[in-house]
Image (cartoon, rainbow over all chains, first blue to last red):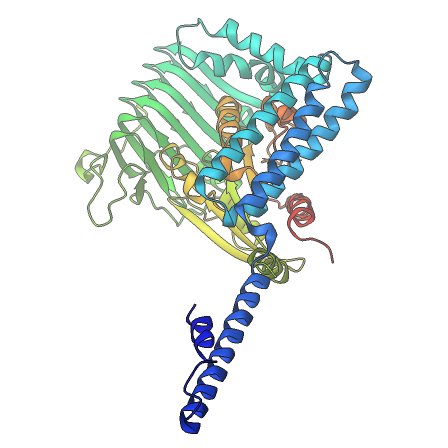
Length: 344
Length: 184
């Protein structure tokens, strides 16, 4: 430090000359002021940075806390259930606290420290879960989770990918059979549902091929899944129509929203009051809804759809987000090729 | 005073929360958002992208993010995880076919590190439909009781009628507030 350097030279300085003396004095004063200033600044800086916001403080307190939780957990192994439960609770609470501490400290930690702390916490959490399962095998949620897991295993060998999900829903489906209208697993038949059957229910059509389907009335929603070479005409749907895995078919329906997935080579005669979307589709073509039946007007009223608003030609393709260029996955059916007569 | 304390105080003063609304397509996320904000819900289109609404409720400023649920958009969900205080998971209670899908998507969300601190509200939506599953059935189908990593709550609601939307959001606010705003 040059301040001390200058000061040490001062006593033996040029005492003879009063001018030089003064300069010396002035210089010394300035040095002193500067040194004090530096000291002040240093103090100020120290008071600004809080001890809690240092990586070192974090890692030591994190590790002590972690060690105490680990100790708590290890004391659980082999202990009585009555003893384990409160200990586990304490450990859980402490872990949560530790997580919060980590979250609070996120700002000043390095990525590496953060990741290590996260990993440590994860380990703690999983060992808590392990011990909890060991200690309380009879708890409701554990039991349920296990039965579900075995269910899935027994379902797994079924050849079709969709089956596990479907059979998982069977139980709830059964209960709701009365409120749901459906046709499934049919080939080459004509199917009809009347307004009385449909009235405001969900309609589900699955695994149909070469069928002609007429749905008179106003469903709440319409689901079409795994449809091949069918002609499906439906009355006004008050909310959305869902189409999934449909090929080589002709569909007609008024609805509020149309959501089309995994569909190829299908013509849709559509009345949609908000928007139609397609996703993972190609060769889908659209035209305005043109089917009619005697009570269509009443069903339109029942569905609450706006007859004057039809956005059939505004289709959003989720696989084609480029603005300006038209999606290659869908087209408008040229007027000359549109079907105008539906029933012989 | 440390920087962190200052930040916390600022957040506390603004009483601001960030809520992220996710769920499968056609669950009713946008309808919930619009209904909550008092807008018309009859002209809603499937969400291509996302909607954000900032609104005031009970003295809190809520930033609600509603991100589209189509399959092709789900990979973008992660872009919205940062600094989320509350996660609202919306389930179409009438869509039995995709409940398993729904459960899987939720459970993979809950493993996300960046959502680790968030409170989870599950809306069992469309309770007004005759074919809707009850809140209890959804709770079981989604294996909610197995969730130990987050505070959670399931509420049956109808976005179309507005039933129970407030109750759900109020629970969420209370839970988040207890966590991030220290009472003076």
